[in-house]
Image 1 (cartoon, rainbow, N blue to C red):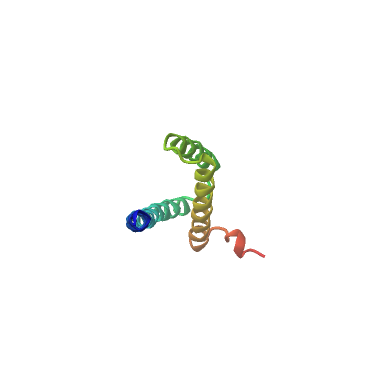
Image 2 (cartoon, rainbow, N blue to C red; image 1 turned 90 degrees about the vertical axis):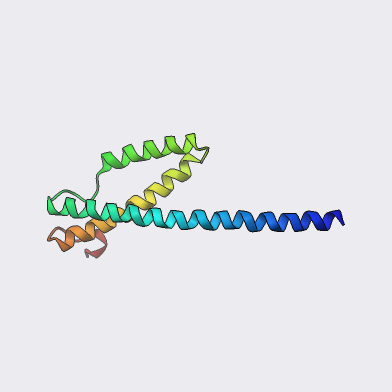
Length: 112
């Protein structure tokens, strides 16, 4: 009987944890959408002023900053860096497309 109660309690806890995870996932998606709205504006500003889509110095600063934030939050800094690198690659790809549509050079993936 005790084992059945333990299993029932575990199922309730699992539902609660999953509900929290679902809420966090939704928040992450909304935060990423807002981030990309801002980076789109940055890309348009860069394109209108002839600035390059990538800013390696800024990227390195952000990596160092995020790695420290991850350490402080007890999150694997390597994971945080991989995540940021993925996001930055996508932002640069968007910036290249914006620049190309404003008369700049074609994105690397569109060139022969």
